[in-house]
Image (tube, one colour):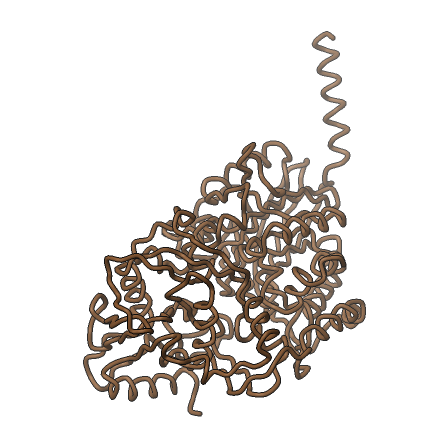
Length: 582
């Protein structure tokens, strides 16, 4: 082929290609986002029938925007944590594994263009997320997690991107999971892969997509918190990305449940919070002249979801699924002799944590257990227990591991836990609990709250010890003995029951105790099923939970805050600030 012929052929190819590109004119694309829905699929609770925000309400918002902006101009993306946190997610993850999973079916009904995996989706394990991947592929929705890299060939385990085509425009959507999964979850849950930092991976992928696909709009959705932007938080790289990314129009963040919008001239960050409270909205407007984009402008906002305004046709479509989950949730599984109140755990020993410690210590060869209040403020009333109550007692799908630790590591672990929980009290008016007044970014209201995460307030079972509120970290915890009176020696090694989350480094308490969780498999001496399953098996065998007998000193030990008069006054005042008088 001579030069003239080659040039003519290239010109013909370019002319043909231009026919499929956008025509000259003005264009507008609207991005709608959700994240951290945590199983809030239905608009009604399973007990009591209370109305709540849900995907039904999200669908109403989405349809309203599609009606105003044109359905072909709207992109709908979710940024992860989709199949954990509610009975419905649990039911379709582990109970009904035959019916196609409800979330892909709902995503298809709602018209999602892409879905990103979150850390809690990985926590569900290979059988769940591999099944999700298959279900999503079957309906043609990409499931994205471009930083989940296969160990065998170095390629992404899931899809990295999708290219959407709208009215001649090419819209690239790239998705990534949290980079810090190895810091919380056992490798057994994500075997065969590793999770890379989003920096510099995302920019590298964006550059490749721009070079190959020449998209007109680029959207990056990450299951990563907004963060501080100082590069110090592997789990929250949102602002780090926003400061460094080039060629990206919208950055969708998630994970921290904090709704936020940051709008700049060339990029907008959108975090819609969690649990279907808001829908994130980004809008890009630009003109095309001669096949090139000119005059681009961006905007972003949050749209509140009204629990009372739902897509009634969607509710009807999925009513059979709701009925199945409700029937599962309300079936009786046993009897409770006394109320279990989760917030009582912040004051000291209580029936709620006594139960968790007792069942954890029943796992051989555990001699000590670590446990925290995982429901911030819940109550299970005495009387019949239904399966729904088990989610109040234990809301997460954590397994129980028994791990070897030295006595000194146990002591240092408890020092770290209480340091996040209580202050060193020097006067009568000081706060015992580490609480501060602040605005709740999820609700917009101002109230007292813990400065740290209450699910990291671990106490120990199987020991007799005190926590001195007048002493600083390192001197607070005095371990007297084991529950049975046996000696406790910091130089000896003991077997400790804890959650898989904690053993894998979640909350940082193990590292504070000097334990390298990267080598935790060398310390694990036994593994057991998810705690809720252990609790359910206990009920099937015993029929009754009696906190007064479960909490016997010889079994789970005793711990208390001292001086007792200082603790009593300060705790009563602080609990009143947190929860009001009762």
